Image 1 (cartoon, helix red, strand yellow):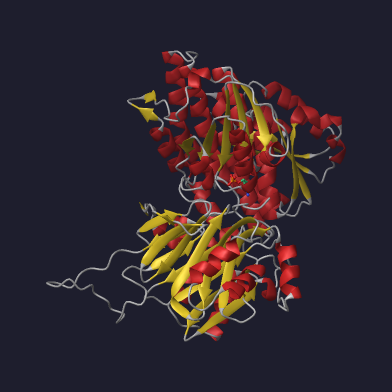
Image 2: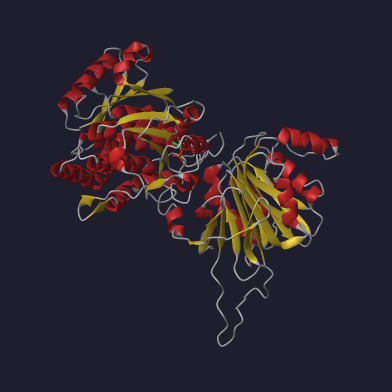
Length: 629
Ligand code: M6R
């Protein structure tokens, strides 16, 4: 977790860096800081708490300069206090470092440095890095100092380094944690000359402004091209432009790519939060995704370098919401393609000794593509020579780059910590992938393929209408139950993952204790929780489990639980049983119904969070990309 940024160019570095941190704060937001190199010194500003605290500090004590680094933190080593905020300075104040990741051998390095008389100012693992750099820096060759320091570090990291005596130089390095370098447009030539136009009166930073960031949106709007650093790569930014090296100091050829997202894709627009915006975007996200998987009205076989017809087993690796999508993926593959499927939580899979049976495909599902546990699971699978496909939203991510094939979600940047549009896109992508495998295996005749496609194509409109339809009841329920201490979510079959996902949303953004349960299992213990004060959300569309679910609702009602049903708003039986109904429309293929059922629960969590005065985009203790174990 944590977000890092750097800037070298004609603009005011602190202002550019503050905007970059704003875009990175989804990666951590318990403290923030920046350092600007100017006039032979590093000017440091740091503040505990949200980014506004740093901004206020900069208003009170501005810094000027054109070269700096910045950080937004999700604490791992040491509480979120100012002294633990990044950047960290070397003992002589000449070097500043920001870091994302964990230095695993920091305790041993710290002991050695302390034995040499270095006094530490923080509890962080990071602080060893600037001290080691200072020991190796002779005032002439920053790159050599970095190479020597990197040779001593164990663990995962992305770092950016600024120097007091260099207002035209930044260094960055990556091992395990993501890091991108950006560069702005080439400056125009003066008419009739070969000279470039500088409005800033000089070229100490080269011909293009240069940036560093943990993620693409933070390079906007300044960068027109970006370069994802590979593991074990260094970038040296200066008047010479960007030079890349490996950790032995050998030159590497940078491969620049155009920046294709716009600044508006990463702004809230007219919404009060990214979460609200991302929930509303779901119809267009699904439409785009479905279009991308069809050509001339038929399913396109994805180009994954894998013969889908030979797949006998699939292992899904995922965490959190992506794991819930994987549970639905299992149903799709079993139903449509008759493939045996295991669904693994990445942090468990990576420490097991999984059997690598033949004809197994591993699918790593991750919105961010940077989740450390899923990445480790992917690497374990690859070490067993299993082919891996990454189902990711961020196609520049590490999981995308390390997978043998990529299934992109095309959901656009998801900034709210609670995953919403990426979840429904994952579910749809898995449905279409199952249909693609079924077709490759000859299990999906033309008319069945037509029905799948028609069912998928109807979903964007059904999603848009369900969002409208359910809102008044969502508001009413949120008003009634916002103060409840706990909420239970029950579902069966495809709605069991919906129950888990509905509970996760409420927990993470509204801080309400919530649990999702398979409704048929509820009577084996948890039903003891039911009292007249407990809201029980029962997901009960008219699917194959409908009758069973009605019986489970009866069991809750008999114990006086408060029933909020998700289902057909016109269903008399359901209305008679439930205290409230959150109405949803009906998908033509019941496999896709969970996409509709989750919508009122996303909105319910959002509204309860608002009523409880919670920050929906940046809930406490969390970060969007979990890049540590
Ligand atoms: O980026 P990923 O999909 O790999 O992230 C996995 C989880 O960290 C993520 O889904 C998390 O559970 C969300 N906060 C849920 O809303």
